[in-house]
Amino acid sequence: MSGTPTSPDGVSRIDWDRIDALTDEDIAKSVAGDPDAAPINFHVGKTLRLKSEAPEVDVKAIRGNIGLSQAAFADRFGFTKRAVENWEQGIRRPDRAARILLWLIDRHPGAVDAAMEALRENSKA
Image (tube, rainbow, N blue to C red; front, side, top):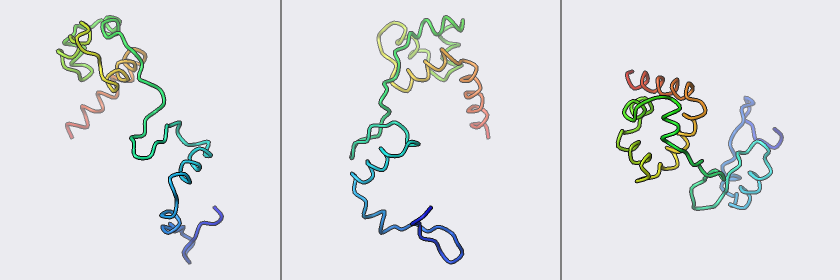
């Protein structure tokens, strides 16, 4: 990469003065011009969030497609039985992270099972 300072041994060094001199506008322009940058809304002082909202999900239908009781579904995917009951009865709405997980369970239950198993194994270590 041209313009990158290197030490005598050829290893790249970070030019902290140059980085510290960057403005938020400079950073936003750099991100916008990078085709490999993730599509995000960049707002200084706010949390970075993906542009897309989490999908709406039908918890009862997802659970029914897998053929599990509320308790078994909750246990298998790390929810509480009460949360599953509340979602299905419309008392509460799953939060964004739960909706994303439920969407994944609906479309790729095997992949979620594998991830949950890896999580369980990791917690035993």
